[in-house]
Image (cartoon, rainbow, N blue to C red):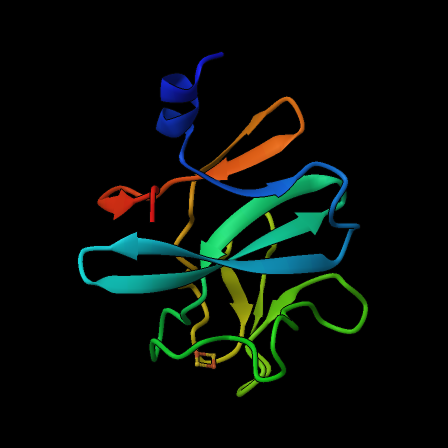
Length: 125
Ligand code: FES
């Protein structure tokens, strides 16, 4: 695959094996004049990515930097309210944002590399 094709996959945000189950990594995507903070998570060996913004107030989920999982690594959590989200879907299943969902960031895995892209985001910045 040449460089032009790789750019179309999105921004390189991680590598397979870099995160264990229940671990996360933050990254940013540029959209217009703004940097959007996002998180890449490994949940049971599968990778998912979401914008780091609660759907009910718009604040970031992590109070302690990059701490998104509940202590048992079962859910993603809002540190402010204790709301919990399903890692594979981003759906809030308990808390003030019940029924709402985190904004998914589509990812693609090419070999060992994980790329993220968001419509309207500039992955080259
Ligand atoms: S900000 Fe929405 S659950 Fe905490």
